[in-house]
Image (cartoon, rainbow over all chains, first blue to last red):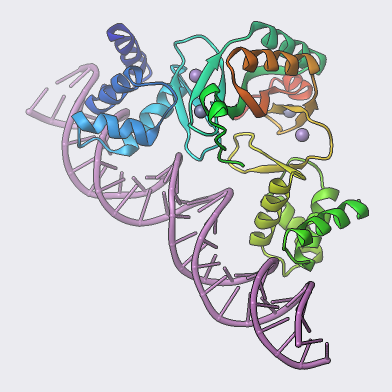
Length: 149
Length: 149
DNA sequence: TTTGATCTTGAAATTCATTTTCACATTACA
DNA sequence: TGTAATGTGAAAATGAATTTCAAGATCAAA
Ligand SMILES: [Mn+2]
Ligand SMILES: [Mn+2]
Ligand SMILES: [Zn+2]
Ligand SMILES: [Zn+2]
């Protein structure tokens, strides 16, 4: 984690960037915070310790991390872009439309079938996303209704 | 197609709505137009014949069709919501990040594996989306680069 | 038909996430 | 240090989508 931040800083430096305390604070908070966070959430979290850091810097830092491959941009269709660290291996998501819970899963068989599909179409895949929306176990039991019902 | 529009009108009526020429024009254009269209595109198309129809009506009509189950909202991550008729059977998409081409595919095996995944998590799926981004055959041959490279 | 309650429309205003701008601060490096 | 480049944060701008509202259309009951 300490090493990770150091690596990223080095990479920024060798790309002509400079170090910055604000950015370091945002990055540290990001890798520490729960996954699938929004800019707004992360900004609030960072500000408890560094009240002067603006949301713009959070936007910029997350975009930078995404460009560098250390973060992945997500969109669960609720109006706010979400980010997750790309250190954990690739996975897809079950999104509960009632309580917002996000369950991660990984399924090699699905991925293999995807490769077959793209191959069949002469398509060179670069990325994919699979999101399944519905009710999590708890919310299904409650009989609660989601945001689209 | 004529019958479809009639059905939708009836359904709107019996739900307490009223007929409207503008909405009828938008709906007809929508089911006639190419798939995966944006509000902006559809508005332009409708306006060639009914110049007084505003974009707001197109927004409203598409939202209505989506709510009624006749249209599906899509998001290919390029900033504009897209819609497609939900009359054709369920399918997922390969999206070329170079030329914007969209290839539809359907894979029952993938869907079955998805059901296994949700079952395993006690998750009640209501909808899902699977999008694979990359280069279509033509753009891959060209060696062209996409919007994220 | 006329009436009047209700729905629909389109322009303008608003919202909201994100991006851009810009003056000032910070950093790297000689 | 000096200085050229990058980074910051507040405010302004952007842009898609939604809301508001006054005027227009539709429908069922008289
Ligand atoms: Mn995740
Ligand atoms: Mn499609
Ligand atoms: Zn839930
Ligand atoms: Zn292409």
